[in-house]
Image (cartoon, rainbow, N blue to C red; front, side):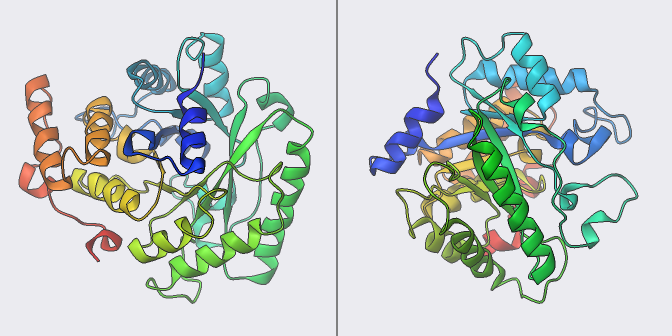
Length: 326
């Protein structure tokens, strides 16, 4: 079946973008970083965790909704759903996280994120390419010569392998999790420069199909998205759950600044109703609802479905992410 992602990327690159072409990915690859806590807590419980079976079921539900264009998973999850034929008659593209650098290791009681990112790959490209033809590669710049050089050399080696496979990829660039000597108002421009520097020597055959980066404010997002819009399609990552207003405000501000993709993990997975959340996100992107009204509509939908909201409406309507307040 034709996948919505390919059609949308073609229109985006041709300059014919409309809000209906905005790409949304459900990032359910948290088991690669968080381990057993990746699927999230059982609704209404503070200490009981969902199982892998629950996680796979949530992926199937979102795929069936046809509201997203990409389902990002660990290789083991992608293999299980592919074997069950989940994507055969679906417009949703399955994607696999192809590396798990040390800065996404957030095991309970660990301290890995206090150190510069080290390149590492669990997934085997040769095995993963038989499950899906799209993969995520992640890199984090630390403003440290030795660590960043090691990360860039690992990315080059990955691209060499990629040329020998049927796999294509998109590139995720995280903000560092610790202080690297650059203040919060300037970090977005450092990230922009490092992305352009990284990809300037990359040919189209090996280039990422799009980016997944943190929203570092409207100005930084607009700068990068307007740099080379034909070849450099910019997407945003979701980060922490935040409030529902944070979710809608993020996708609204980023799209207005030129982002054309949103890849949300915890914001979707930890919501009271993931399908309702993504459906409302689509209305925000289409400018049918502004972010504030979208929160009201989401809470009305929860009430209608008999679902208890995690926060009171007044609290859930607040913007708590500093990058969005600016």
